[in-house]
Image 1 (tube, rainbow, N blue to C red):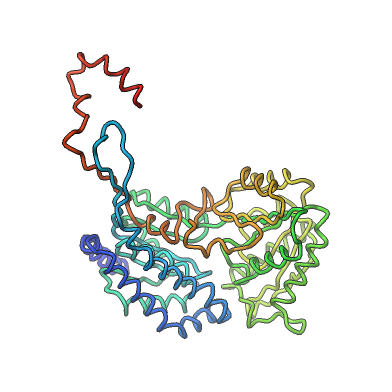
Image 2: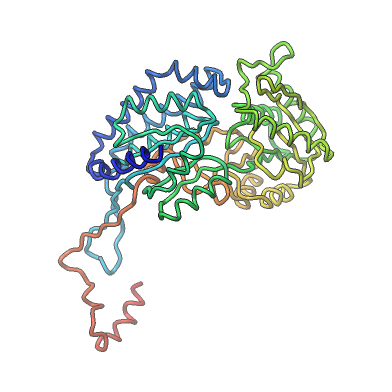
Length: 465
């Protein structure tokens, strides 16, 4: 496999110079080919996601396929504008010059995708890479094997491997790929593996984009519609059985509102995911594998042993890898469930006495990928946004900020590096190249040696700066 990977990489290294010359028309045609290939494979994709994660057809359509179609359509609509060189301002040294920023492809790029949204999270960066004119090697997750097989087959049928190729396999394949001097690496996954990717990239000075995760909080104050907040948090937490990188990882709620929140959350869970008193497995996804199933159950058990109160759920079925929606209160701050990203249908609720206490709690942890705020009080909203840091923030809703291609999506520090979607994805896979077209009347001769006669010029130049 390593030799095959190297062979394809070398082919792409040669071909990247041809792709550099492609115009918007050619790139748009490739984006349309990708969309058509996805549309032709829809039934296979629905079946694969059902097999890998027990995703409902509707959920797959909305969160995987339609999301990708929207990315493609947006890129097709905007690509000519994105590719056009942008004018930049002048300074004294190029007062009469024309200054431009050109967007050139980075070259040969690697995209490593996770298992939780195995189609969307490989196709979205691929759309950006194609729009920017790059060669690409894809590495889907082996944990979502059915979807990985569909992606590999779709790519091989649609594109030549000297332009876009896909390699299935386990960590050995990823290790072989990371040895190569890619021009850019785009990784989506855990913070721990993100560090491994960044270390490998450093050996070849490859630029990287890391879309990671972390503990994304939801702050609920005393000035919001609590019933609506609980419904939105329940949906955002439990879609894909909580296996979402921007799912709310814990809730911070004003002490006096805890009991009401619990009741509203329970009611929302019952309405969305239960039928006749039983979990509706047609709408509720499963945990990806036994390893993750056991990890999540261990987190629940340890939290309860440490004194956490089980307000909802806690039951599971190992045969079909189902963990029921679970709500925990009175969770110890130093318990494992409050230290690591949960990535499952388990929601701890932490109370606070005043807003500053909630802000300090968030700031006491690594910067999250997302932060959610539920409040109708503008002063509270302003304070939270001003005094915290997060990859993205959503006010009075959950998850929806990721769906707007006009907004950058990405983390900060432990939750990621760089951004994607729309023009931000295009720029991620492009090098912004500064180009100065100097005029015949340039003033740079003023600073050429000999310097002795020009010492008086320094005061004048300093004033002009």
